[in-house]
Image: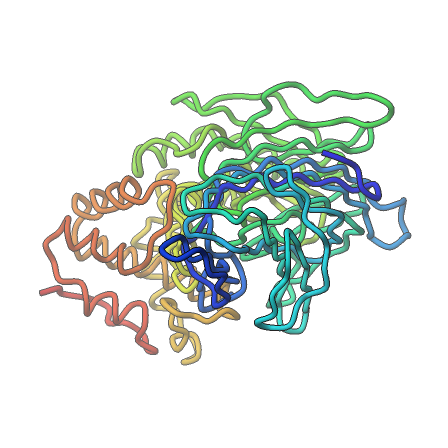
Length: 503
């Protein structure tokens, strides 16, 4: 690695989603026909997110970050990155894309061989030699770093890509104008990237169908803490006014579930669930006394929550758990893998919700964003199960209260099985999603319902699946025909019937 203009990034690429682009580079007669990897993973809601032609195995992300100057200065930080990504080509690959938004690229190498920066070529134009170009079009939501390696990559070949990048950080917005990605805060950064915000802080195939393992080395001014996914493989190191924090996340992880939050955190001592899951919490030292009390009471229940959910869903799927609680008004919490992030405080129901996501959304992710109800419906329903376990409202009572509440017709018109990119996080996705699961449980009975749930989690662990896959699992376990059930609950633009009888 080499510093170029103060910015260094190493990307190790071993990868491919398998889609094929339109630009072909002929090989020798009878030899490989090299083509461009697809720009995008093919998701209908975010067509340019993720990429084709390779499969990422591992990201090693090195970050040096300077938080904003003291208020009231603008919230602008300074970011320098080093990312090492291991990939495997899934086709004979002429060139491939990485998603990267708002950063400036300093250099790119593939397997140690440098590529030359060129202007984006016209469609169909031929670019000679190893090259890269970066397109950033906010209006069209296109943020693509194209890398043309030489020699070209054969299907099955591994590669290591080194990208130098960096620049100022702000507070980026998603398609709904909500904060996401690397969100600059007054004392650091809060990182929450659903659905496709990881590209705001590292080059990535930013779609959940291309999971990978991660390692992090995050360097921040001395006195600041940096907290990411997984566990610390070694203690942080301080020298010359800077501290580097190391984190390893060996489990398969979707890009939107990565975090590397920076701030004035109290990184607390590790404790354990009954089954031995290590729990690591990082809590902002500037929380108000009331919010700190709420947060502490909620986090104290995490071990018991793990125990309960394991009794229903099977073993906790990852190496660790915990929380990052930041004194910032991002406005939501997110189930970043192994270490959810919370804005301002962590309430008990929210903690249960984000923990449930570790099974539903993190271990098994939606193959298509239209199936987001599989994440949010399950996390909402599991929270109701936790409430019942602790002597509160039962899951049946919660269902009845929801079902019998007077609502406008527009509430029932949202198709939770296909809510649209602007409907991903609307209330019905959560509540009607949970209602779908409870109605399924009542219809099939507890034995078949929980058997199907465990089979779903076992069969698709560390991967992504669809609502059709979910239906197939429950039909396999129960022997029931569930076509009409799921058509009604997921797609009918009307209130489902109060009772249901499957064929």
